[in-house]
Amino acid sequence: MLWIFLFNPGRGLITHFLGELGYDWNHAQNSGQAMFLVVFASVWKQISYNFLFFFAALQSIPRSLVEAAAIDGAGRFVASLSWRCR
Figure 1 (cartoon, helix red, strand yellow):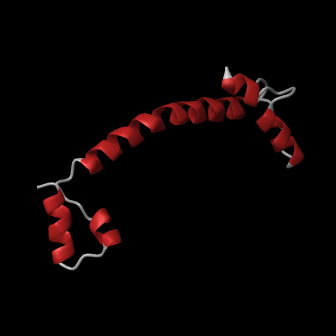
Figure 2 (cartoon, helix red, strand yellow):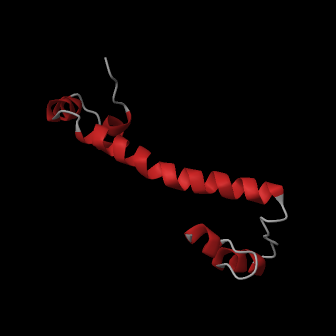
């Protein structure tokens, strides 16, 4: 329902802003725009699940590995990017 409100060709909020930028949005008549809308809605729905699982995996990293990375001289940013499963 939210997507219908936002992308309504006649009075949708995002459609209005795109029109102000000079882009004519009408997904009912343009198949490329319709496909973009379907993909965008699917990604929006799925990204929350992926973030939840990724965040849970990061929370399950033992504290000893974080301390070992700090002792080895890895900075906080490098240590967070270079986890490896063995």
